[in-house]
Image (cartoon, rainbow, N blue to C red; front, side):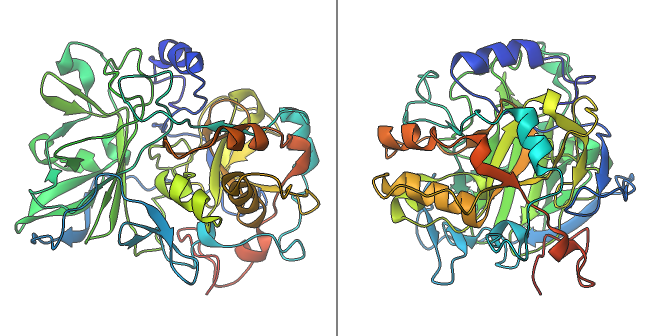
Length: 425
């Protein structure tokens, strides 16, 4: 969700989202709150690093795909447990998002866990913030966050110029955050991932979209004043880069977005401190989503993402988050805090394979506080494969069965870096 001082679409979009049960909001620009460098909610505030110089990384070369790239590839796991989307790992195995945290001796409950649980409400229950609809024209059934896959070539990918100022559209007057965004710049027949788009000429700021069958949050709704966060999530196969846009709309043939973020999926590098992404926490979205293929397999090997209302969140962040948003609630939950299903919660054997896999992931990997939204809303992809019973079973997990986790076992290690997502070495 955008900072209240900047994002005027919030009230109208929120009404639309609530009508169909969506609780999460999108990335947040501007300075955000302070960032604490430790996983226990410490006090070391890190300086920002936006600057005015574009940084170019991970260029991609043109190539000929050996086989068509599916628009929405299944998510699978390697024998060692690393999550794959298409042929790309969702970050290295050492990433904190891929690290098990169910050893309570290494990862005890956070000192503020009971306070934070009480602020949300012990009886508040898990809400699966996705559904079974696959028709983007039906917003009451099609919700969740779908993921696109491209290979970067002209066969599957368009690289249009992206505008961060909606004023030219005549539809909205909002202006985004190119200085905290990543874009693609044409280079040597390919495209270079470039940080700080404000330092890139406006006619050179590009973003990869599928050339056909584009999937986005919110389906075919295309009014930035009412259609909400409208995330577009794209995995670029081959180069293995993740591209995520917040409030991405194509209006009169021109693409607009409030913010864009990209990651090299082979790297452990986090975004610059204080930078937003498609999420208020400055984290990626795609690796945390609950995906039907994984749930059907019975094993999910990564953390999930969760939202809470602004009133229980602090306008601060803690590693691995990079950014914060909203009002400053004293003693509130920081962005990036890790929530875990307690070890003493017995997952019923009668639950669906999907529900058991999701609940087990909540125990083993937890869920990171990523954004402002509705309390205890966990995000996933829309898919016809979801079973009705999965939603009702997950909905029986109360906040009283959860606990926030202390990550100081990682952040006190001398090898740890606040700018890296590595949790093991």
